[in-house]
Length: 195
Image 1: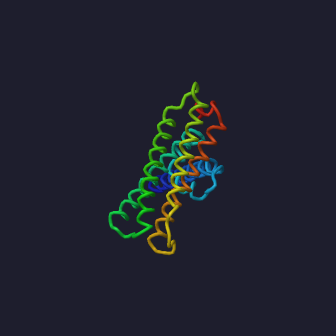
Image 2: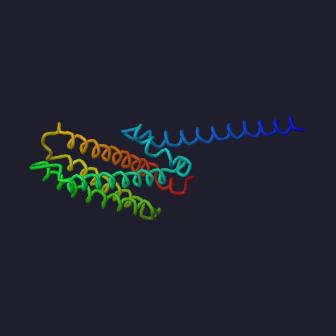
Image 3: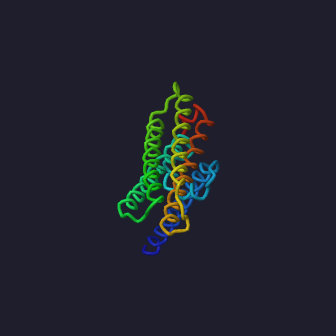
């Protein structure tokens, strides 16, 4: 009797392991499919992997996930920039550039929030207009983030290098979000009622 119990337990655990690995394969497939249109493919897959099972093959859910992740990254970068300013680490021209950068990031975050608001209430009647607004606001956010990098001198200093890396990461993630929105726009109205 004990042998049968062990055998049943073993078979159940084997089945469970198989089912779990198949589920993660689907998740990998979903995020890989979604990120196939992005410029920074590896970063996309890494930053959006946790959305695989909820987004599935839905272009609207992937676009929403992309913008949500971008907002989080932009807020983290903004906090980092504000800390740099508060700690008075940068001097002269770089301090002025830092203030400009902080302002650019606030504008970018505002545009990202507008984008997410639209993605949360997509509808067939206004789809084309909504896609136009999304593209405009995400492009504006990307421009704001790029503009943030202007004006820094002595780019070899440790603080400026770290800032440039942090801001560049946000621009890459924003670029990926814009690609996911463009994929949604190309998928059209039918994608709103998809899986």
